[in-house]
Image (cartoon, rainbow, N blue to C red):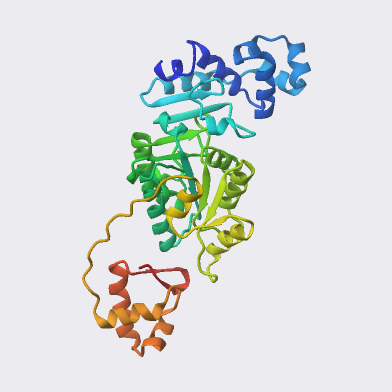
Length: 367
């Protein structure tokens, strides 16, 4: 059982699982018991009166009921699979950055490269409904920062998170996904292929036992692990009521740097970033801004591809758009083109990646 034995002396994995998977035994009680008794085996063997004095009757009652033995056995079998690991608070491979936080998970289930968990990292988070520009920015920033030596940490959600993972995997420092389910599940299902890439070339981690479904309460909780693993947190796009702002707040409370990319004053997905900047987050326009704040080196920008010059009519339409979201009628007014001629040019520009369509029929220039 290589995955289990890596966590400490033989047999320790079983004791840790019996202890940590005990229902109704919360993280605070778990840490209190470990401090008092020294390890999970000692807690499990302690007298009931000692458990009550240390952590209260409810914790003692939970330990008397014990963990689900089927779940413990299933997890031990899961650890037999190549690439699966169990990290405990007593494990020398447990991420040091996470140990510095106020509420580190007692257990971490890991699938993939555990070496990534102790490397310099940056959390990159944002909206599940990111705009085309936001998704492009997230992937580009993540790729450049990964090449510059920062492992990209995010939450495997659709939109900005997925783009951040793709960018991180494309760079030399890879990417880590912190998920809100058990590692035997992929949520959302549309990210199954991305999860397989992370398991092969990066890492997936969770504090939740196998079989844990995507419960709403688990995702805000996992956000503290996303920020805790990283030296800073970059928010790309976020509405004012957003899980990304929870991650940013937790990053700030953990003493991490918070960065935000500004956007259009008209976009709801810029409101969260603008609010963070007003609260003291660092406004960033380039990946280099982040590296300088973290005291790291310079990014190496990829060479720009030579592109054929645009026809004059296309250039005129693109120039008329500016860099704010705009509707087709406004473009017609600014250029003097008829609706059919404008629609033909706009479609061509969209297919060539010069603009993107936004909700509500708006268009936005991408480059």
